[in-house]
Image (tube, rainbow, N blue to C red):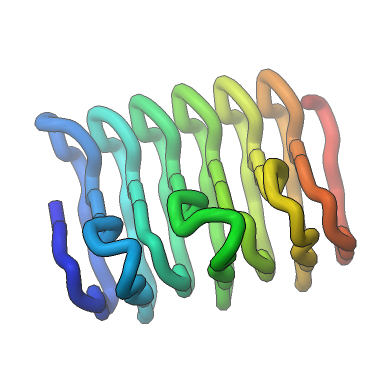
Length: 178
């Protein structure tokens, strides 16, 4: 668990087989008056953990790259900066790729009032939604853009579930058997 009022800059995490809770929890939602970003670079793997693979809670921007979260006993990945409030929305950006397969809840949950940009998202065989993105509840619509190739297959609920007031742009989406 990383809890800080500062700026977490993490690189190439490999966290598998945690039996005590989440694989990784990153929190810098301590001082709303001075929001700081969370940056996770490199290639990051969060597999086979007791609860969430990766759980990020922030008042600031969230930027992550090359994420894999498979076979966790809860949600694969949650990225949440909604607590920053509707007056000061912050963006969520995923670069490289994101893969979340075989989790016993949703593969990916993203909560943000700000713009969301992703690339190359794969979510397969999750017990709930493959990917759920929620930008609702704001008075200022923000855009959602999913670039690259996006695959949502064999999830027990929706493959891709979006709640947004802004413009949604999807590229190369395959969704089947959900």
